[in-house]
Image (tube, rainbow, N blue to C red; front, side):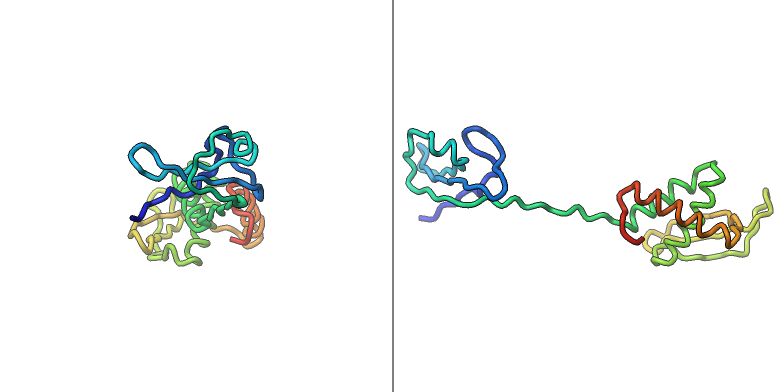
Length: 170
């Protein structure tokens, strides 16, 4: 007869405390009234204090805490920031939006579709971008940023991205 045994818990069955990294634990198997196999995991203190050890099998192991890295989707954060600034009335955000659009274009997330349109209201050049996956279109006013302003703007954007958790090169 085959039994399916539960996987090890990350905490002690008795005291409910989480196991500590590189510390010993004891696992024990018991039968319940229905002849099903139950697994209980104990920290060493609780196992040593346990009076009724009517398990049919027990063993010790060393608990290794697995730390999973949270993968940060840099492109998604840049895209979200771009969309946030796209609808902002703040003139500085218009500059950020333009720089972020260039970053997204370089990462092949959006593509420029037309740069020869002028706004009827302001007379300024408009740039039309399309999202390569979703087909979403974005119209951005070209702020005609002077070359001397590009570096400081890029540094400001990097600082904003660092605050959002992007610490390495974007």
